[in-house]
Image 1 (spheres, rainbow, N blue to C red):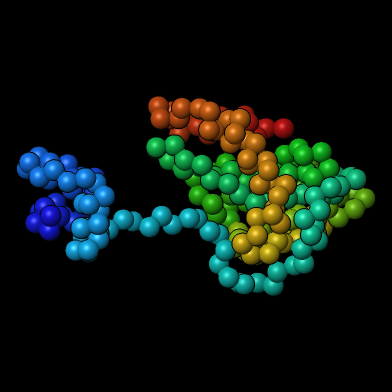
Image 2 (image 1 turned 180 degrees about the vertical axis):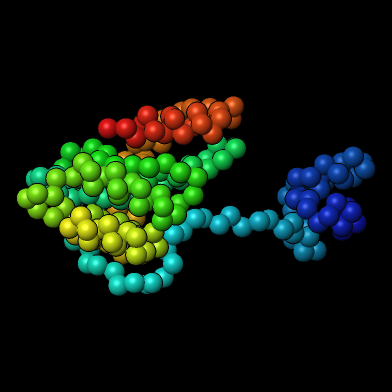
Length: 213
């Protein structure tokens, strides 16, 4: 077993090890192969999947969480703005929307290849054109990602006389309004579809149509 493991670049698991042994007329059940491999420390290296996180630490002062997980609104004055990523086998796509907690509409959104400051800045520019700031200062709530703490984002918030609000780090319920939107969007649009033969442009168009208010 050790010889088979080394000859195959130390990448065999117990199932492939058992198949290789069977081809050599050595018939052992999977549980025995697994136990022997553990005893001999024949463990295949597996890459650790790194989940994307935009949190870069406290690079600037964080505003107070004004929502406190209460996403109801009597007027279109409270908005949420996290980001979601989905992938085909060809390319990842990132969707950054601004959700109005008053009626659940998407008041601004952008779709891009990278979750960077340009993506969220473009989204905010589009949203500012539709938000009524004549009688109040709408609240823009986000997570603690670095995108929402760069000078470009802060300048846009100040110029439009918007009020910032941020969730606690690593607590998705603090962004439940947007997380619920992403869940419904993916359930109705992304998961049921077969995207294996879809081009990047077609995938982007489908996301854009689904996010369009």
